[in-house]
Length: 408
Image: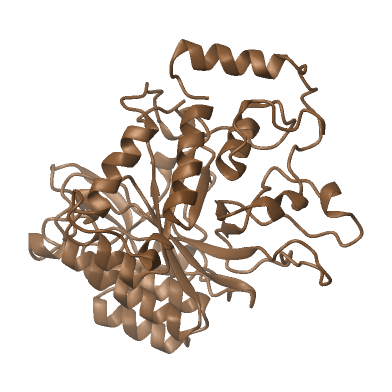
């Protein structure tokens, strides 16, 4: 719940208490039948709920209903989001969640700063079968690319593998970009042969899997819509370079009849190369753009050294700020087609019902594609009386009284 006004906190608490506190192990509030009420797309970062043809839609419950689109980090999944014919709720789309690779400037390895301008963020990239995967983040041996060309090539290679490109072709893309390409099944010994300790721009040293792209060769399942790209590179690429990269990735996926949805940080984000000068070109290139609405607040997570923070603005103010970026401060209007590609990522941690109602109404009025429900360390599921479920009902259906599901 948002750390907003006292009136909002007290008002919601009274509304919830008026119909009692459900047991912690109560059944999940939302069912498959709730999908029929949706007026726009609702994304989750999770596997899609499994369809059970032996149960009525209202008896098929999951923490991840309502939902139309699901992104998961495995290209294939034996549990297909099957929907029975003869009037069952609309089919749900599956997306392969792929992380965009970033580069790190390494003196003596990166030939010049224009090959990689990132001199401040040394965090490297994850990969399938990461060395030290059971250890804390600081002890993992992550993949680091010394150039934009290498980082982008690896993202293209990983996407190409998921849609079935030939191994020799993937290797040739790596050679052209100056990186090695290894299968995730290569084994620790093969990967360890690429491990290097390198000097960074600040004079410190770090150990990386250097300029190696590790590829999961598991193909996307046939019902996978495409790739949801988690784009948080923070490596100071230029707006022009970003458009070129997205154009290549989108073109590759469209060849395989797959789509590209980009999820990213709040706009503008100069370290990601996303601002008012190129965001419309990006919209015209990709099939969906999910940008996060942020209040600046987080509960924190000690597992990744994330500290708690209080909000610095309301989600509504952040939405208006980002809308100015999308419209170049009102100097241009989004077309209907462009608006239909925009997904607003909304936090379940720090959004009030009043703010959720505003965002729901904006999405309907402006014809945006929809929302992505960002857990933000908040557990989904459980009884309807839980604050996160009330907020979900508000965002998805516009039901914002705080009493959703009282009769369920």
